[in-house]
Image 1 (cartoon, rainbow over the protein chains, first blue to last red):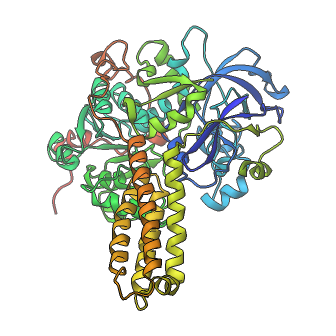
Image 2: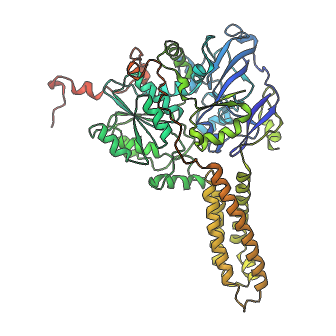
Image 3: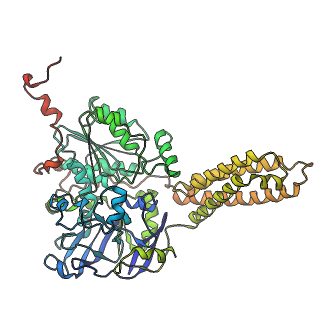
Length: 391
Length: 199
């Protein structure tokens, strides 16, 4: 089969690889009909997250048709089922899964010893996201083996186009969880840093959950325009001070809820000297992440507010203002997304027409064009916001 | 071919590479990579054995300068190998200018190694040409083209419109583990006797 394979920093290739095989009784094989490039794939593209190996298949946003089912998954899945595959692999039976904390499933990470050493305690297995999360082959491929497939799937009805439901596997529930863990009240201002795909989903989620005002921060005109279309007030950080404008929009009090939809690769600009400092340290390997957004959120958030972090961080950050964080009594909520906790509800909202997540797709191409689209997406060329690949 | 070795980290049913296809790396990216590694190699050589350079060029006593240039080369190399490779290559071009100026100073008539300096100068000029080609290549490949971006004004994501969407999910119950402190508005709406009194 064909698959997008990581060969090194900025080197993704469309390779011919062997087909996946059922390994465990709970496995299933899915024929991928649509998959996407996620913003967090770019951290792997840049090799900022350790433990990728040449030959690893990329991709953690995918859906398709079940073509083979292991004996123990047969009660829940059958050939021909149409499924979205969540990026978190879940057993559905451990203590964390029973609590709904699916992204920290205790059994699905098959490289637990390595993950225990790095994280202290292992998190769930993830598709196509380094050997720290199991080294599972990803879904930017024609076929995918889904471990624990009886639990790791979201069944979707026929008749809804792939584009409407594909993002149930990652960015939609990720934006949703980011907003939910803010516990949005009708009086709240929610500020969202980053208008990439997750930021766009967080904006729509905050609007649906009834925030008084939603403010979106970025500097790319096309992304700001899409944010505005979704009901956000926008701030272009190239043109105005984020902190001054946020205070102005909140009567000098600051937003109650702040969402970091950027993560470890904040934009670098001489007008934000800390980003240059972070970039220099990152190049020298003295810091893995560029946490400019975290610093800004902690500074501007209203005391007793909530900071929600769906953006991916990989390792060590520097110069985090703990004094501000502690003295302002801010609540920090983080984590990979507990995808399956939200998907029944979100699928219903899509079916009812409350939201159509396909609005974010700007490019649809074949799998062969995937390597080039990694570059286009990374360089924000051709107004690219979200790439869907058709294997 | 590194993927053959990494197959030891894969399980039996994991796909393995049979044939490699086209890469996301373009010719300019590969050139940047090669020049980046060249910078690292040259930088290490200048740091470790500066006297070899000064002796060959008739610049004895300038070992400190060569070491400083070695540090500079390492910097160029690190940046050229990073995602900001255009900065690395343009900084290499600037560094080439400095190298040329330094070699020109060593082209004096009383330098017995003047011929070597001429050869070094020709080599640096050749590398400068490669650096300029590489820098222009990666800048062109990775820049956002100027002009108006596409319009996404109609991409609301809400089939029933933004106004209908506001608060449409108010039926959603935030799970107990994700609830925040009571909202500030709720506190300020309390009866006066419930408010904290100043000391």
